[in-house]
Image (tube, rainbow over all chains, first blue to last red; front, side, top):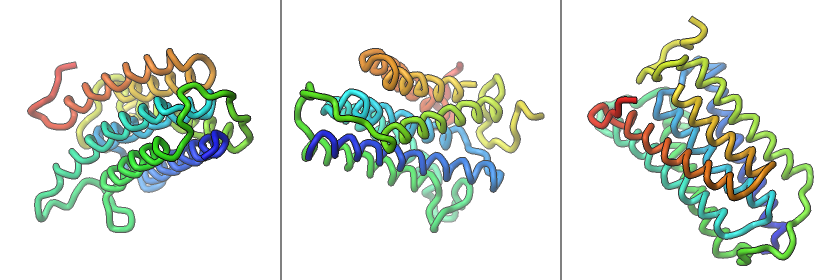
Length: 180
Length: 52
């Protein structure tokens, strides 16, 4: 795999994470389903997932950037897995609504597993240099992916502030604290 | 507020990765991970809730 291909794949990964955050936002704003603390923590983990690909796009692909992805994905999977275990007892309806039969925390868990697999594949088949000879040229696809995901994380920060206000977030949020 | 800080932290890491230096982006990334672990302990179970 060439460095240019690896950079494009990292940009596609950022679009994938952006899609996850957009779907979560849609359910929050259009369906009125406010995210619980663990749900928001999973969004934070998706934000953490983006740092490695952004570094790979900016400075060229290196194995250590995939290490950042793996660390963030393991933590995110632990959080989503914990929420799955909370609702694993028979008869428990789970938290929130479902998408294609699975709760959002289950989808998040699968997303983090996919991120782990993708980072592993990139480590095996991607460029092996710890210091790329030259940084591949970026195009509109790569720049657009970075700006899109950065905008979504900024919107999530704003949303978290409006939802939780200046104190701790309630376990089962039903209203935006700053909107009264 | 705590989740605002968490998002802000990784937003800052992303910005540093894009506009400044990989080294400082890495530092902020690991600070964010530590904060995430604290939030996880606080919210994962009532029994493990941390007082902050």
